[in-house]
Image (tube, rainbow, N blue to C red; front, top):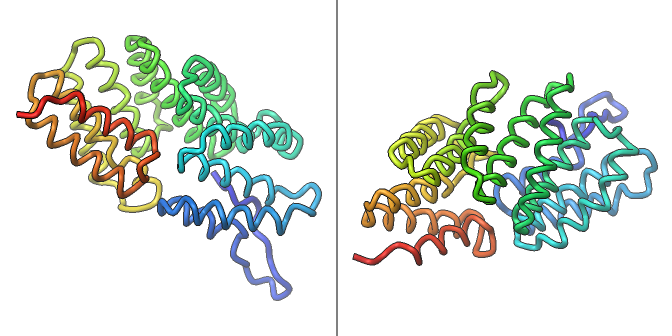
Length: 277
């Protein structure tokens, strides 16, 4: 999915660096404050250009970075402001508009508004499945993953399992999303008391993740595998192993995302549930 919009050429017809390239690189590196500052600068520079997508796309990165820094209410407010803008620029069913809705749904989940997130993810997945854009399959997988997470959070693991398995069977699901979907499936299975199956899924996710290139979006799964695996091990009564994995998850999330990120907080909460031997 191209958040940069169309490429631009200078007078010598040489390709120029997209205006949002640096902000996107910083975000993917986990430098969220720097990414936000860069995106805000781009938005200010380009905001006067009417019917140009650069400033709105820059503000989308601002929302993503603000959410990653724990300022979720602020991120949601930016998403809400951008929804009609994206609809006017791209159209309601365009992949960029649907991507914005998917990002907004993740913020709803982080705010604990799981029923709203579930409904929005389901709607985005349906709309993207009907699209022909090359980025549509990736968006379908992202929305289904959000739906799985929201269903698990609402205590509906059987439904989460069904959605995860459907998404994993889709040939358009990439290996990166296979990782997070298998983690969602593991959560659903252990919530149903099927802990051995859950551990097998977590181990499959770890194996896939180990084969992915380092850096980029793959780093966003850092810590998630250890959190899920530790949860399953705790449910299996393997408390020493669970504490080791939960500690590793918390350390990784602190260094990767910082103390306010929801995954860091999840790892910290999990540690409090594991008895010390």
